Length: 118
Image (cartoon, rainbow, N blue to C red; front, side, top):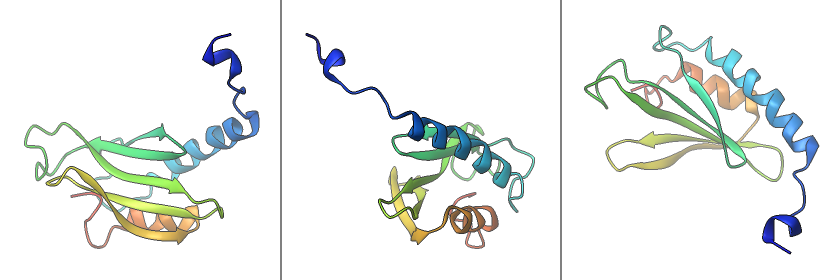
C-alpha cells in the first residue's frame, strides 16, 4: 500500500472554509488605501493566505515585478496572525497576533506605517 492510500482524505469542511475566505480577503483588499490601481493576488498557503502584488513604488523591486505583501495565518483559537515581508532580509516578520480576520484585514488595508505596501 502506498503512502497516498494511507493518508486520510482532506476535510471537506476545511476546503469549504478556504473557498469562502479567499473571496472575502480579495473583496477586503479592494478597500485598501495604498496602491489601489494594482491587482493583488491572494494565494492559499499552508493553513493561511499569502498576498502578493506588483511593486509599483519600485522601492523593493526596480522592475515592478510581483512581491510578497502579507501572510495571514490562523491560530488554533480561531484568531489570526498578520505578518509583513522584510524584503531586505527575505523573511516574514510578525506584525500582529490574536486578531479577528476583519481586524487583520483592516490593518493590512490601512497600512499607516507602510510595512505591507512599500
